[in-house]
Image 1 (cartoon, rainbow, N blue to C red):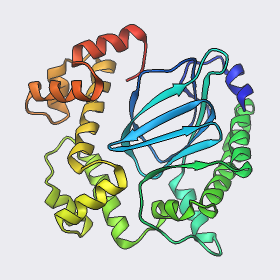
Image 2 (cartoon, rainbow, N blue to C red):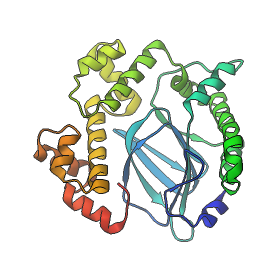
Image 3 (spheres, rainbow, N blue to C red):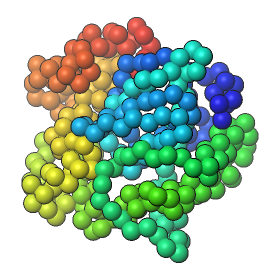
Length: 288
């Protein structure tokens, strides 16, 4: 699998011809990057990285993977990598439809359990072989459409049948309450520019505001307000970088009524005010 990184000749991240398969390479420790994580298996081929979701920090290294089961904002940083042994990672976004299909066909599907929506796991030979087959398909582009769904089906099976299957089962079925909390999370993600009261989200989840707040934070590591704020700030950053949008316009479009509050929140998350941060990103060529 390491050979694929040597031969790619591409910038990192490399969004490959396989939809949802991304290769990452870093020659050295980097500043943290912020992005909205999709449900995915994030495999470390070489090096060490950490990712934070609110108050939860996950460190994972060679032979391990981070699994994310719901779409949510987070920050990541490579903490071990160099010119002789660069950080290498394979991100495989999980197909929810295939995951549900596999779960329904299992003789003894795992029960759903409550817990964080992201966790670190040790990789076994079966999962590593699946990831290697997925990467090898890049040299056979004509075979991707036919063979990659089969690889994805095996990945989903091995995740559900493995020691962390119960944690992944919530992504597929979960309890009625889990599904309603996840629906409330999706509502907040889709309507992040709006002013949404926690009472309204709690009603979607069928919980009291206090109980919803506890469950949401246990799942994502963030309060609903923190989740929405990160979604707004990441989207504003993306718009300023890709559309040359001013901070004031970006702030307004993502739901901020006060440009000064936006600037304070932005600097707190990204380490610099909007203009200085965007100038740095353009100068260094880094992604937002």
